[in-house]
Amino acid sequence: MKCGAELDRLKKSVDENSERTKPDVMAELLMDATRKAQSTRAKDRVQRIGLILFNAIVEPKAADADEVEEMMRVAMEVSDRDIYFLKELVRIDGNLLESRDHIPRYDAHTAWINGFWGDRVVPEVDSVFQKLESYGLVKRLAPPNNMNIMADIQNRYVLLPKGMRFVNLIKSRASF
Image (cartoon, rainbow, N blue to C red; front, side, top):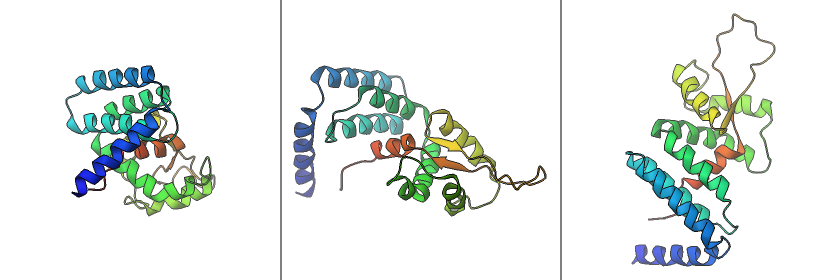
């Protein structure tokens, strides 16, 4: 019963909001999503591609085809581990980004240690976040200018609006 009501709600949302996106744009996005899904073996990546397409269609605003295409491309490239780190950065920086278009450097720098990585030097952090930075989801923060070359500190990263948008698009809207 609960699942049926949720499905009806989602169908109504798709019907209402799909009118804002032109049918030819939706068809192109569907074809692109299909091509991308066929070229990957990972079920989790296929699921993320589907979520991005679905969430872009059910939003109240018209889908930006270029943005959706880019987000699906990123979804094909990032791993579950990358997503895990990105979601942690959204957890610690997301509320700072909700009311502004960027996070001030000081705020991002001080919030960084609230992640599960703390202030330890963790080589995997750099590896994952450099990859995420290459897709424009995060940005490396310049180290404090009061440090000398002998300081061994972990690079810190800040969430960009595109990273927040990506995480929002890969979230499941189903509540069951």
